Every structure is written in C-alpha cells, then in structure tokens.
Amino acid sequence: MKTLTRFILYTILGWKTVGKFQKDIKKCVILGAPHTHWLDFPLGIAIKFAEEVPANYIGKASLFKPPFGFIFRWLGGTPIDRSTSNNKVDAIVNIFNSREKFILAMSPEGTRKKITKWKTGFYYIAKGANVPVVMITFDFENKQVKVSNPYYLTGNREEDFNFIYNFYRGVKGKIPENFNL
Image (cartoon, rainbow, N blue to C red; front, side, top):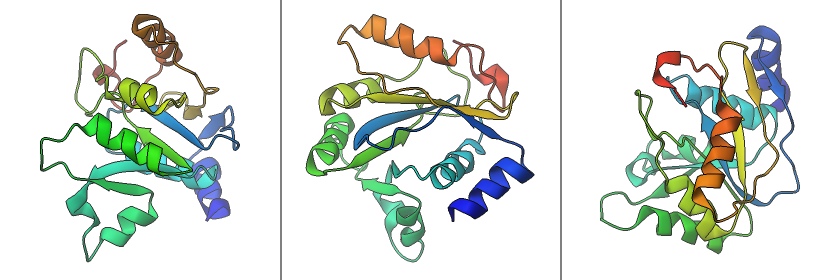
C-alpha cells in the first residue's frame, strides 16, 4: 500500500512531504489544516499510508455499522457516540487513556466552511491526554504537506495557540478564502 500510495501522491499528483513523522511517538494529536475542501480527507488518508503513520480519526458511531463500517475502520476510524450529550473531549481522552498507542488526526476548524476562529477541542484533548500536538499543513498552492516536530503544550493557552497558528500562517488550502489566521 505504501509504494502505490507514494507513487500516486508524489509521482503522479506531484505532492511532497516536508518534515518527517516521528515513528517513536505512540500517542499524539495530529492537526491537519487548513480544512477547506472535501479533498483534505483523502489527502490525509494518502499521507497516512504513504508515510506509514498509524493515524486514527473520530467518526460518528453509525458510520461503523455494516455493510461499510469495515472500510472506515480500515482507514483508521474510531467510533464515538455523538447521539448523547456526553462530553466528547472526555470521551476521546478516555480512548487515549485506554490504549497503549493512539494517534488522533483531526481538523482544528471542525468544518470546511469559512470560520473566524478554531474550535478548542483538540487543545483540551491533547492537554487532558497529556500528549503532544503534531501539526501538518495541506498546502494546495505549493502541493506540500509540511510536518512539525511534536509540540508539547505549555498550559498557557494563548502562548500555545500563537505557536500553533504561526505554523499555519501563509498556507493556502484548496479554497484559500476559507482559511485566515
């Protein structure tokens, strides 16, 4: 799968990855941004296979039912019950705490639409699970995915968000007008 995905992504489509995912990290939150188009998900899945990153994502539990649920699991999906008013951050922190290895990839925007500020769930998940954040860009202008070193939150939310935002400044998503930092 790795060879085929790398061939399609890097040779045929012309993308490149700048930076490396650290293979020794057992748990982290990967922030994939900007998330401005449906193509971001297949791009993220392609990066997962091309770079052999055992990343997971959270999806509503109904996606994981037959007949197609196995596909979502194979792609790294982890179900979460969104039908109740459970605290989603706590539920995801519990997933981290119950596993020896868990890498969660998510979009900090929470939507593909234009937004004025990011959702904060990723921050509280990483903080609650005591795991680093790894930032990756989906830069359609330069056809590159840039990977950061793991960033360990300081506990100073403003300082942490400034550091994270700075990593994404100047990146152009598929629909650039939907992403402004």
